[in-house]
Amino acid sequence: MLITVKQAAKMLTVSPSLVYALVADGTLPAVRMGTGRGTIRLDDEDVRRYLEATRARAARSAAPVEHDFQHLRVS
Image (cartoon, rainbow, N blue to C red; front, top):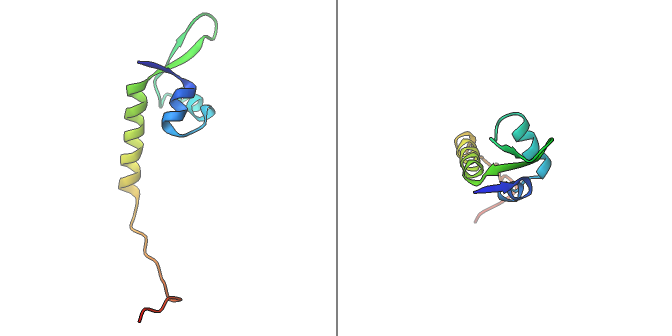
């Protein structure tokens, strides 16, 4: 199903301007509909795949965080 930039931004929890940038650099595939510049539409499955890919990439790059709680005393 084709969705608007605003709907894609809501799915990704980002601003519409970031979605436009992702479309402009080819990261997110999109189609233009209408005459002239037209309106941009994205396939919701492409948006879901992008979201899953970014989640997977974030999970791989997340290193465990070690905390030094010297100020805490456990008795």
